[in-house]
Length: 457
Ligand SMILES: Cc1cc2nc3c(=O)[nH]c(=O)nc-3n(C[C@H](O)[C@H](O)[C@H](O)COP(=O)(O)O)c2cc1C
Image: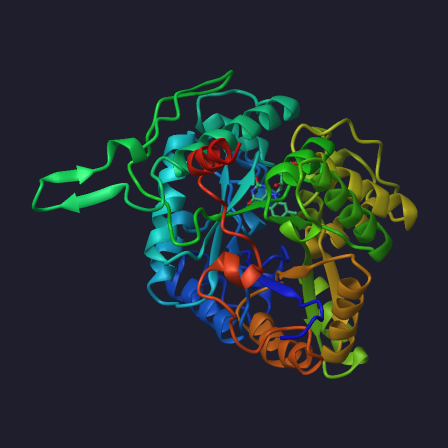
């Protein structure tokens, strides 16, 4: 064992590629978005490289569907519109992997906590303790119309609901005590110990849930909780409840400030800095030389039409129609966004600081969806990752690729060995569960903790 701080790596699988024109690259397999074999291949490649987890984002609808319904032609060029439902996918992936963590998004805005508690705990059992839930409040406003609403729920209310949702889900997960709740005693005919099963009896503003959950805790206690909101409300909820924080950070100074802020907030809730792992997104564009990597990036950017690039700004535009503004003029003032506040702030700041035109910021955003794009050699990439780790800008990274499978395979075979050689990334999995591999504690059952504290007092 070494005392050296080790990187955490997640594979953020954005199908068919995170770059909006990535699917057009000659190496890309654009059918990966609906092909489970593609999902399985990427996950197995990540597992062979000893990644902590693979992560699937999700939206419960097609982004921009209102505009698509109005007949906006540019939308017909958009990828990232279809995907497999991630929790069903995780269950299938558990069958073709052994070690890697399996993490998926589920929104608290358009779900019910009992269903989510049951679904993720099932995956945790199926995978022997490798599941993770990325709790989001939904960044795509179009989702609302699939669930009986005309408008997306306001940001503050979404977070209020999310906080209560979290309490209900984790409360349900503790329904059954760890030892001896299920007796299954053939001789006596007693199936369960009634004293070891607990009713939640939750009555709150958004939910009324009696419990118990009809599924026991897993070997890691609960699935790992990830969160990806970076607004004030998002940070506060993450600091209180998240094991892992996914974030979009493009500059080391700001990443360090975000890192320090989340860890400082966590202390308020009695949590230690190492209880939360902060993992910014990272998009690699590799080349054997810097010139080759730059040429690879330019080849990719040349595949992207301006009208498609502009669409990458639509979900943070606060409803403003950006097509009305000159492409070579500045990014106009945007009204407040009810969707993704932190992402809007990041993009506006990037445009203003770099004096970018509307066309330039749109092309920049479409290339990385706000995540940091690193163009360079494997060595340069490892240098940057090591720097962010050592300077406390990140505990690890979520690697999200422009298209699949080639750039991800290249990252795993060219960058990961360099990280291992430097002694900042594992060569073997340390534990059996996702919590063990991430260095996280197993959460104690709240009812057993209450009994233990009562006995001690
Ligand atoms: C790496 C990463 C992954 C995300 N994945 C999702 C996702 O799958 N679905 C979603 O609705 N939002 C996703 N988000 C967005 C946020 O979780 C959040 O819902 C949105 O940004 C609004 O919250 P905020 O205003 O607190 O940032 C993701 C963000 C990041 C940084």
